Length: 169
Image (cartoon, rainbow, N blue to C red):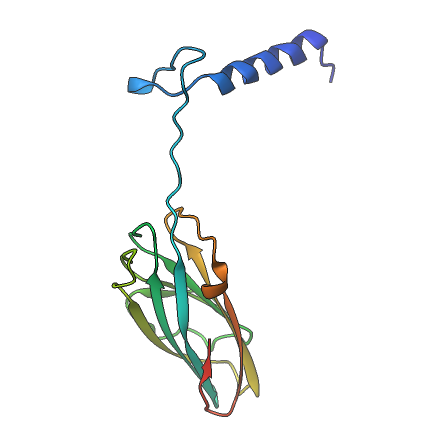
C-alpha cells in the first residue's frame, strides 16, 4: 500500500479541525475557537461490605452496598466471582443473574450520595463438589459512568475455609 504525503497531511488536517470543533445546537458544529463545553463525569464512593461463609458445598454471601457520594447513582452492578465453579444453574434473588460458571452479577438499585440508601443482598450458592476453601472476589462492574477514586472499599478478595464461620470483608 502506498501512502502519499498529501494523504497523510489531509488526515492530520481533518483530525486537527475535528478536535477544534465543539458540538453545537441541533447537532451542528460550533465555530472554530468557540469554547468547548465538556461534561464532567459524576463522582461517587461506592462501598461493598459483608461476609462469606463456606460449609460443605454451600457458599453464603451477605452483602451491603452503599454510596457516600458526592453524586447519587441510579444503580450499581456488583460482580461476585468464586474460585470454585458453581453447581449448574443457581436459584438467585430477582436482582441477580449467573454470568458464567463462577460469576454472579447483581444490581443494587438507586444509591443516594448520603449513604441513606443501603442495599442488602443475601445469596446461598451451591458449589461443584465440596471444596476445602474458596476465594470470593467482590467488585463494582458498572456504576453509571461515575468516577470512584476510592476502590479499596468496593473491591475485595476473601478466602473462606470450609469451617462454616463468617469471613468479613
